Image (cartoon, rainbow, N blue to C red):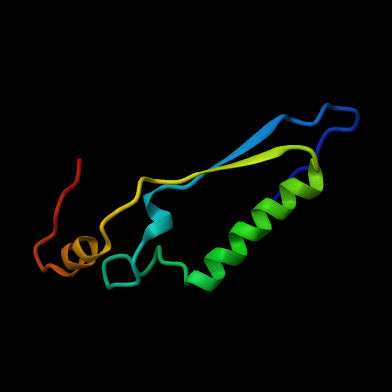
Length: 87
């Protein structure tokens, strides 16, 4: 991560980390270029949080995630041959 806290600047009250749909990519042939293995994903999250905790120890870290999904349907739809368009 780049940058550091400005000297003399007040610590932020909170920082937010937003996760999008790409963060939930499956390792199938359609999304293989976006997929990150679970252990690496967890390590990345820990590194992001550790960075903020080091920069601003009193700052709250808010992780904002996509809503939950029903995994069996998601996997089944991901395996379908006919591509789907989501809007």
